[in-house]
Image 1 (tube, rainbow, N blue to C red):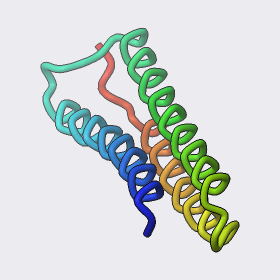
Image 2: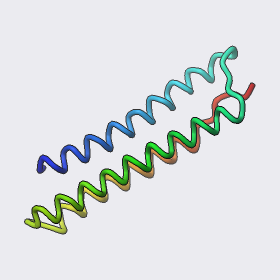
Image 3: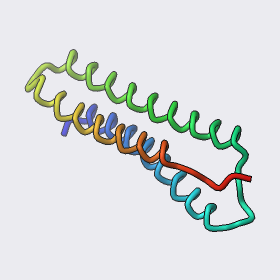
Length: 105
C-alpha cells in the first residue's frame, strides 16, 4: 500500500473510530437512568457526528484523487480499491450515527 493511501485510510479509520467510540459511550450512558439528553442536544450531536463523517470521507476521496493524478501507475485499480474501502466505512459510520438513540430527558 502506498504511503498516500495509507494516510488517507488512517484519517478515515480515525473518524470511524471516533464515531464508534461516541456510539459505544452513549450505549453505556443509555444503561444509566441518571444520564439523558434533551432533543436539541441529541440532534446537535448527531449533526456534528454526521458532518465529521462527511468531512473525513471527502478528505479520503480528495487524497485518493491527488495520489492518482500524481502517480498514475496501476491506476485506476488502486484508486478503485481505496474508494470501495472508503465507501464501506462511510456507510457503516453513518448508519451507526443515525441509529444512535440516547435516552430522552
